[in-house]
Length: 160
Image 1 (cartoon, helix red, strand yellow):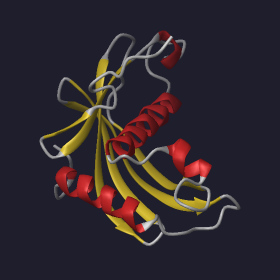
Image 2 (cartoon, rainbow, N blue to C red; image 1 turned 180 degrees about the horizontal axis):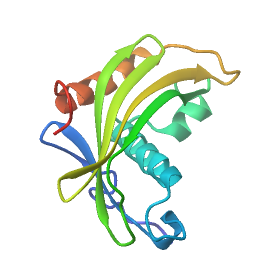
Image 3 (cartoon, rainbow, N blue to C red; image 1 turned 90 degrees about the vertical axis):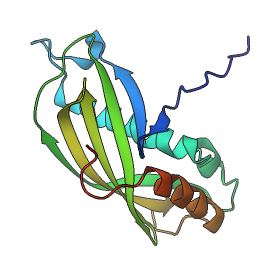
């Protein structure tokens, strides 16, 4: 059985930022019924991965070495601020903006909102690494794709 391509499964660029809708499921919550703090890290990961996917940069192709050496992205630093909780069945927006791309580093700003209200924000520094864990530059054509999408999604300051 072949899976049909869903037009905006990877989110979309809206108002200068990548926006990915995420629904909160029971598995995302703790015993109090609010989203467990670790689940937000997973939501941010989905946002970053789909932001890259819209730039036609795919983790599986990087790992397979389609552009030469086997590459991966590794989170080097993530500073998170929690403002308000999300609960089961909430529909959230994960917003991602490219702040800077330099050498092996990619800096992103991410936010999670519910009905326009900021719940969680994160400043994320990602490193491009080789299979043996050494930092390396993203191949030029991939860096250009990311920069193109990033310029469409880049706005100064906070995302709101």
